[in-house]
Length: 156
Image (cartoon, rainbow, N blue to C red; front, side, top):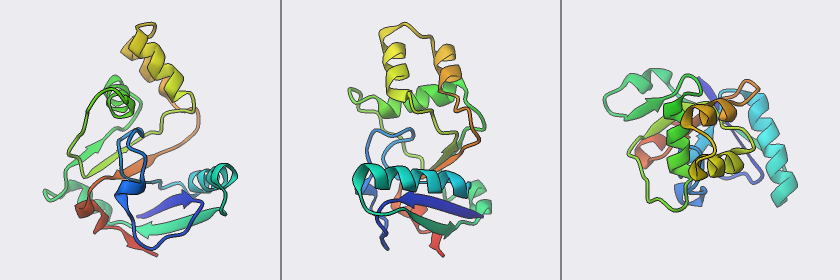
């Protein structure tokens, strides 16, 4: 399968330490299987941080997701488990880490920080949070969080 990474600076080597620690699935390298989604992200990043929109294409053998060699977590839809996982990863006060090589699931919408704050203060239940985090457009994200997982990505 083809996966895309939208960015504002082209690079040859993936450095996991350059990723923000408090993203939906934690610190890692994020891709999507939807090219237009990567294009939108690249345009947004270049507007915010300079540079120019870059779409990197990678090949990934999807059959590896069932491999015993990789620890994979997949969310097929916004669920309470998905919302809790995002909350734990984005919470700057907790020391949450996970040992998944790859995590796949929907992207939380742009009001994530606000909604997570409401959940933390108790004004939203986890069920309400998962419904409100549901992105209103088709989207997906593939998180590669370990050096082992990166070995399976081939830049095109």
